[in-house]
Image 1: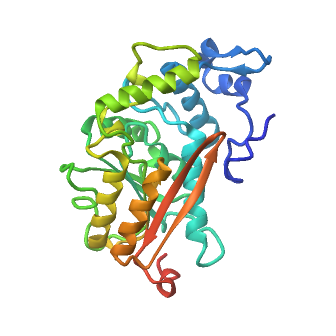
Image 2: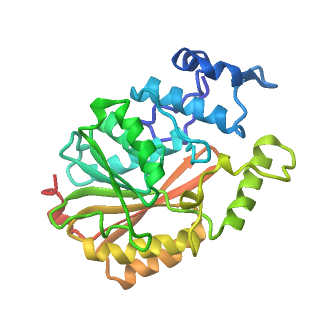
Length: 307
């Protein structure tokens, strides 16, 4: 199998997908698998149903998540890239004592967990961490709860909480005595619905290798998952500013940053707020480059006592 060497060394998806094994896990997937021009089994990644069934098979085979599903129109994330974020967070937590902390004494916060619940599912399955997933969309949380209901063993360590006010990220979510090892977030990328539609058209064109006049937004997700006023930069700036109020509740605040050009403004804000330490962690999945921005208010000498 081809080694996807750009993925994290612990990522279970470094090898090419074994579609024959995945079809055993989810037989419906066979209807979307075909041989390409290189005589390799694959799927059409521009088809939402094909990607959803692939995710369902990956989550069952590698993470023992049963009956995973999302409604039509919700974000269907690539599992390998989501797993990478989790593994780099594990490395971040290991920096203080030389080993990765595991088990439910490690508590993580997933901002905007969505209907798919992927980050908590991977984090709990692989490392045993206790996870809290939040969202401003009640329908998304209802579907996430269905996933938990279908996997009763997960309900002890994965919890959900509704954010009633879209102006806030941590307020209404973090209580006074909460102690999270980390927060994580895949922020809305686009600045508007129009921007999201244009981005989705480009993505579909790249995958299908032909022009798509009317892109299917179901491939990308719903409004709260895709765009917010000011886009990614504005969202993360709000997160950084609000994190000051919860500086003693979270060891490492983190967020994905898709646009490299946003890093300068974000790190300048962190400097202006006199955040003791921040860093950028590069990630790559094939030709796609992303990065994690991480910052902490906890002084180095106090981090060992966090868990």
